Length: 173
Image (cartoon, rainbow, N blue to C red; front, side, top):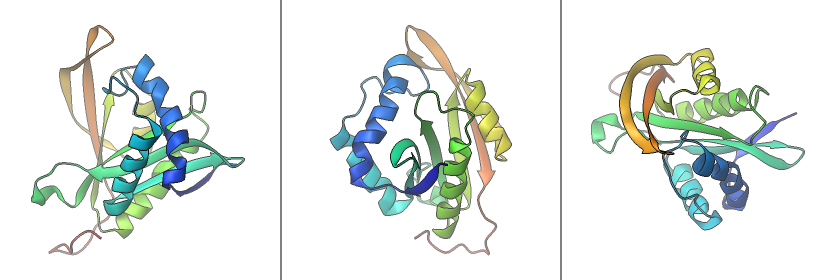
């Protein structure tokens, strides 16, 4: 049974290990060099300070993570966030991605965020299916936007509401 909890810097090495194969062997992320544990620790701390970063554990071993961060730097976007989820290879369709995202959405809603957006490199049927099943709606595709692994890739964007809150909105916490 997968357990979801808040991440800490102690999870950085495991998160870096999960992410590295996506960086080196796929176009799912457009990063070229995998971040080391120190870089990942910084990313975790930054996300925790403003949004959230969660990990999924199976038998006390980190097998996935999800996080939220700013959608764009302009002030008017501050109630929206970009979200991502990564699972250890071989963990797709196990419910871990859904569990991570549902817990992440709850955290982000508690902090006052209203909308989540996610981008996925195409084709990516697993990610497309997960996002659709969680209520994300398509908002557009950037065509031939990223060059990786000797070819151009499209990125499809989706969004979903996190919360309906009164206006004017209070500042996210």
